[in-house]
Amino acid sequence: MPNPTRIEVNCSTGEVQEIELTDAEVAEMEAQAAIAEAKRAEDEAAAEAKATAKAALLDRLGITAEEAALLLA
Amino acid sequence: MPNTFELIASYTATGSVSQIDFSSIPSTYTDLCLKISGRTSAGFNADNLLIKFNNSSSGFSGKALRGSGSAVVSYSPALVGFLPGSSSTGSTFSNNEIYIPNYAGSTYKSFSCDSVTENNGTEAYALLIAQLWSNTAAINQITIYPDSSGNFVTNSTAYLYGVKNA
Image (cartoon, rainbow over all chains, first blue to last red; front, top):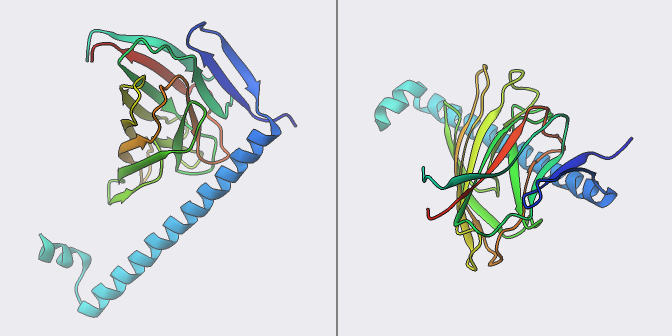
């Protein structure tokens, strides 16, 4: 299977070239994607933990999220 | 908008492409403005849109303010926008603008970005980003690409403008 391609637009000549990525560039892209996926999973886990902690606190206080928002308004 | 806003180059994807690269950018303008309508093939609701200057992805630091309609989040990856992915409503694209003042100067390059995604679902995003490229080189090449292993899909567009006497 051929590697993905990138587009290079030369702003001086107007020439547009479609260039196949080298194996090294593909490896770099895949490494970047792995980092992005790890960051995404980390962000989602942090958001979920925050939501859980918020729900637990509201439960302990015995108020709803709307009531908490009223307190802070 | 200054009346010296001139189109330098543009590209409309006619197929799947991993990166769009503007090279040999003339140094005759004072500022650059890059406008992107994009979508990625990655299986996300929104994927990061990243940038390289002079083929370098290092030296970037930024702060982004992201609103989803129900929450505001502040975070600091080196990104310039979001791209809807295959989990978003079909045929929807994001709007992104990147404004780079003094791109040909010899100081560090601070620049700003705004981005909105489109999704006829529960969540879409708006982003405002302050970015810094800690490099003194004049910018003569700009590359944009999705963060994940997805590609820009057909009909994604990028327009590079030069601004004189801004």
